[in-house]
Image (tube, rainbow, N blue to C red; front, side, top):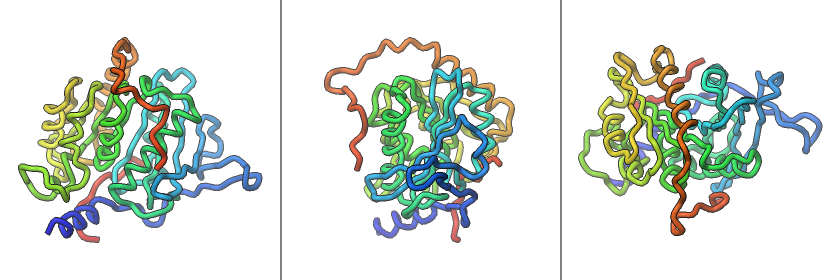
Length: 295
């Protein structure tokens, strides 16, 4: 029963756009610069192809802001790819004055492989390592942003990296099974066990959720906020659904206040010797974000 339920939840969790909404191409031969279709004129965007521990090659884009003090590592929802996120990233970079590192999960967009819970963990680890090695982003200057299913890889990484500046959970899930069934306990076969991982996150957590979300009930966001060790004022968007929160004016206003607060926050907390983090983790239009139902 466990294996069946887990496979059903996993199947319902991933809806990569088919066909992908963008292409990645290289100019100047095998060693030439990578380009992302629709962005070739933006010199402040770097495109990466990253190898993951799962053996896949995933696409990541680094959106640079010249005045940025913080970087968002953005994990998108399950029915979008990077091509559909361009407008949102342009707006967030301009309004928040942050760098944005975004990526497509295995099996999404131009990323190879098949989507799965484990592959999303390998994917975000590869992206985090790229931020450290290629862009010199320290964990103290990094904000993890997880939307919907993207809250799974976000909390996976946040539970392992203890000196992050902050975490944002946008329309997040408590776990995969809990979206489908109102269970009261965590089963071993569940996926994206965010309800357990949030307890291991030591940095400030902002939760954003719509009160009229009919895909992932508002109770998911409220419970994640309650379980957070260091709570930031949540944003409960009155009348907000699952995939339209960016359209509400309070969304960008609240997010801007949060980013400014994190920029001012003195980073005096030092990791204990037993918690020192490695240099990297071992290599091993507004978007649609989550649907559950049969294909």
